[in-house]
Length: 509
Image: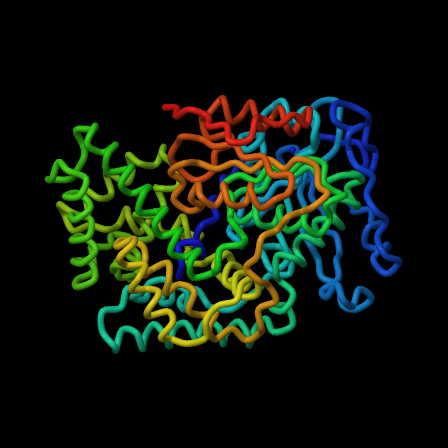
């Protein structure tokens, strides 16, 4: 499985009474909201919904809305979207819709962390609203695999060294695709990002906002850019943090991401040398990177010790995911040092496995969310992928040279798309959003999952893109410790003021 397919960081946290939806009060930025074009007659009933908000703990309110399964047949079958909001603490201007990425990440779970995800200044004026996109979590989810099947799929050898290992990888990938087709046939053609963006416009209307105010991270930047391209006149302010470049072809995108993880791993190693607990015997970056390679090779030959008692073998695949997980957040680097020390010195991979479980959203009881299945379903519909095994073999070989620790895993992870039961409806092309007001694109210079070059690409492709960089580590920048980034994003969301495009916020911490 591609590391991209595992990458939804879902902070869990966090409820008050609230003015009714549609009761937008005048305030900072409200007068600058554009007038939204009226929906078609067939879609008007969806925009006119008034959800039955109910308290759902800790000051939050939850509801469901309905959207068309197929937007080309709006009078046909409907599906449910689950929505959650944390009402504004002060004089309300409107709603801030947020998305954590993935694809497949739960916006419901992400919104529960609104008190840390969004600044107090922004929460004072905006309801923070999260939703599970179609196919995800609580919103008519894609289902494909049992927990034991997912254990086998995620733990398969995604860096095959022999023809037999390639055959096994091919078999598991085809099984994944076939199971999705068998269990979610009616939903699969309609889980793409364009449909999710149309859902967001319905939600904008339901919430009573004339223009969309949005914070999207990682894949959420693609969702936001797609929205702006479809509804440029409906945009108020979009923050696209940890940007994805929609113009990069699918397999090339895999390789670029793998190189991003390689860069982040080297940054971790350099930092590790500054701590006395650093487990590497070598005192050079290249030497330490080789020690990590040797550890993965050992795990490929003989699984590491697993103290969890769940019967899983901690092979190379689980170890790679375990190493990748803490690269998303610099604050997790000490745990990676500890996990590598145990694996290298004691042959114990338990902590690596526990970190891998965080990324794939495997719960303590062995069950999974549908993050992995939704991710694959959305990616396979959104992007054209090769159909031949030879194409993946060649691409994996090239990726291994560019990113030896992560390249093959990321590349082979897209193989189920070769067998996907529905055709891709997307194309890898720039999204320009001509006619939209300024859109703020944020990129971190050493982001492992969404390399900075993607932020540069997206900002240049959007007609009104404004680029803000952060000279930091980890995945995404807003509310990650940079006062410079936080101030710029808040100023844009609240007052619609953008920084000078190309501004780089300095490294912190």
